[in-house]
Image (cartoon, rainbow, N blue to C red; front, side, top):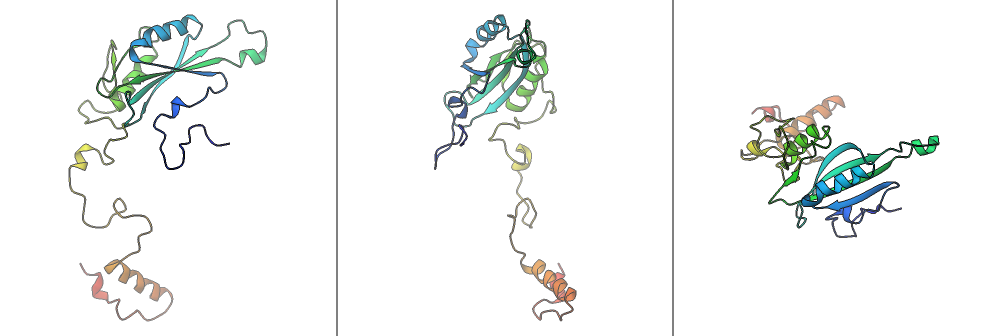
Length: 212
């Protein structure tokens, strides 16, 4: 069965979560930052008392919210009468859309202390700020690190190295896989192959070709 997130032929999935169906007992709730506190407090009152994780997602070009901050909430049945009921908790994913121009959401550290390091990690890697966090600073990268590495427009070599010219000689990093050898490298390979086969080297593969 095709994935519900698969884009149509010739197109791209701009927001796969917008068409993703509920998964078993995982209910999906989409909100904006101004609704976050009221939403999670209501869910907490309904019994979703465990915040299992917080994550970030980047959808470059999506409007109006480029980012999602995803909250995973869990409700355990306190009065389960069967083993099956005890092993089937309810789950809710709260997807909070965040704009690129104002990447700020309220902190949940006062409701769930476990949100502390998760919020710091999202700030560190995506640049999304958590208003009211008691100690919002980078948790994995140095304080002077430039940029946010999990944003999909982050330079592959990092901002500092991306500003320097790439080397002109062939390296694995700038030569496509499967590119055949050429020049001196090709001549050296031909001599090695001929030697292994006990053949005389080709006249165009001269030893001086190896010299720089």
